[in-house]
Image (cartoon, rainbow, N blue to C red; front, side, top):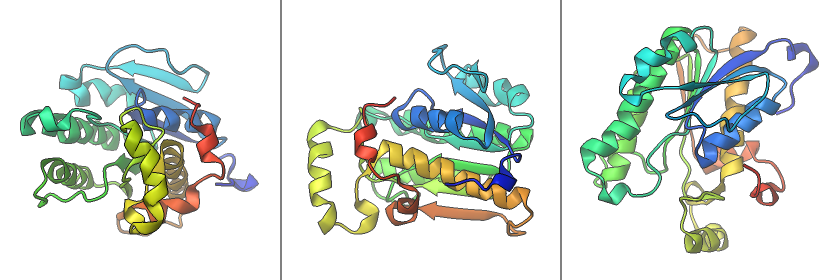
Length: 246
């Protein structure tokens, strides 16, 4: 998204959960590069030093005390983004384990963010998410969406990718076949590159932030579901060539 010169001074701060993952890592780098972002708080379970620069601060937390640990770091933050989840191995996990990672942790993260003043939120889920779904994973991801929505942000973007390309958790065969089959699939099931997904999450959040900063946002809280078609306008030409980037 091109930032008008008049808006260049309207800098925001952001906090990110899942920064060590494929999509989350790309989100952090986009925030570091954004002229609108003045500060990035990276939340991790262990010290990584993966991101450096004057904008970045890394907060190592005990996930069992996530909300409490984040409280002092979430004050004054404008945008909260979460690209956090299990990745591989969901079939082998119990519902209780899966729900803790996919629902409890993101909910506590966003509650702390809301308490700190965050008004714009973005969360990565999955296409087909539905709390009434018969499939365990999609049911719990649907619960995740409802849990985050209940926190009550001014703007909530729910990003529902299908197969994520350039993702180490995506089987190689699937990553090769999906782009060949995309033309035959309904748009929401089309594959999306991790860099495009991250770009959509950052760009849509910046757009929502600017609307709020300029007093142009709706008076009621807004929840926007973004599947492939809604995310596509934010894609960057030549994304596939960026797959080697962190």
